[in-house]
Amino acid sequence: MPNASDDFTLYGNHNSGHAYKVKLMLAVSGVQHVYQAVDLDQPRNERPEPFRHLAKFGEVPLLVHNEQPYVQSDAILIHLAEHTGKFGAESASRMARVREWLFWEANRLGMCLPNLRYARRFAPDECPPGAIDWLQNRFDLDIARLDKELADGRGFILDDNPSIADFSLCGYLFWADEAQVTVPKNVEAWLQRISRLPGWQAPYTLMRKPD
Image 1 (spheres, helix red, strand yellow):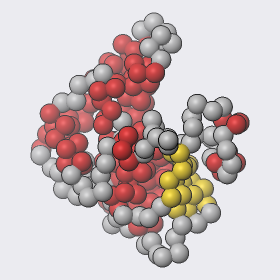
Image 2 (image 1 turned 90 degrees about the horizontal axis):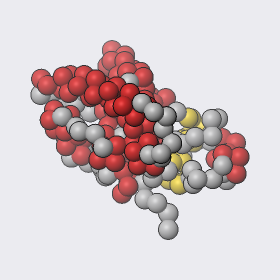
Image 3 (image 1 turned 135 degrees about the horizontal axis):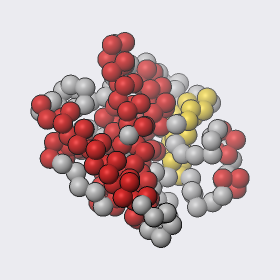
């Protein structure tokens, strides 16, 4: 459980859905933290310290908790859930179900959707022929699977209580317009429920770009 001596610093970027997952977890759970924006336009070897030597893969998000660095968004979410005892870590069986969804997200929706957004918003002329069509077909399969999962009307992906699996899955879906994809009705209703959680803010608001 968190205590008064806990010290959290999150390094992220306003365009990173992976950083947004973690920032959203911290916001909804009410964990006090410092947020440091990282300029991803800088080459990795020129990014400022201490980010450069703490971020093992040179990527955001990076969470520093009591001087210990943690990287990779879903791994950070697991750490935060287990540390707080919330959002999936209430029991071993619940956490096992959370991990299933985190691995599914990383392999499925978390692969195609960020790349679609990047290709269509930031680099429309850089993708090899057929790449965007392939990503779109993959997304269509994945979002249909998620929509079917939510068709029984439960509040969140596990049950009627939110978990880090929800934060992971929704990370890039709040940018569906930038990826130029359509979100089906059950997924849209689920996103609306997430957006009503205390502390929720949209990505560009929660991770404001520095002046």
